[in-house]
Length: 242
Image 1 (cartoon, rainbow, N blue to C red):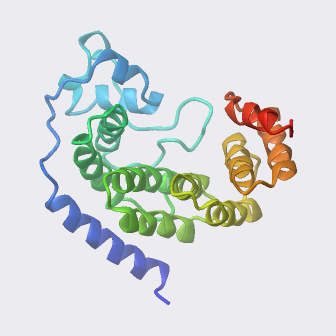
Image 2 (tube, helix red, strand yellow):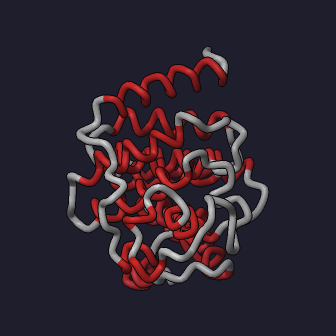
């Protein structure tokens, strides 16, 4: 079996090749709308406004200066991302693609790859960056590549939940709830704290497997941890299990 460092080198090399054949480089002067800017994580707003991409930022926000650094409730979010403004522009592209602009996936992959290939494996944000790179790859049709990106992050940072959840989300979208559940159970065994989103994914996997009592158990836990969306609860109600 390949060691973590060798596996990381091979994946990084592959991603570098992928980035070199991407459709086009990011445009530092490509305008970001105010709505696109405000839905970004706080560290991204700071990173973009203080970077070579500042001209893309809405004029009213350009006075903000900073670098990609952790802010807000998640103390690791954004920490240790090299070229943080590239990653953050990738988030802009990924959000655009989610609204129907499929051509934006190429830009997202390229921007995420710029940061990912320069990261140390012990970076606090390694799983977070890989999770989003994998999403861009997966949704653009490169599904097996995305799985490799997520699997590597899980291997080198087993307590980083982001890549587990991204992989589970993809497996659920493929109607593979048992595989998704197994991924989530692996995280459940190593997690250091409880997470509302992880519990909700567990509940969703159990629901798809028609294991409704277990689904309710994890869903209640998700709500107790502050999960804000109640669609799965309504589904359980419709089958008389809530």
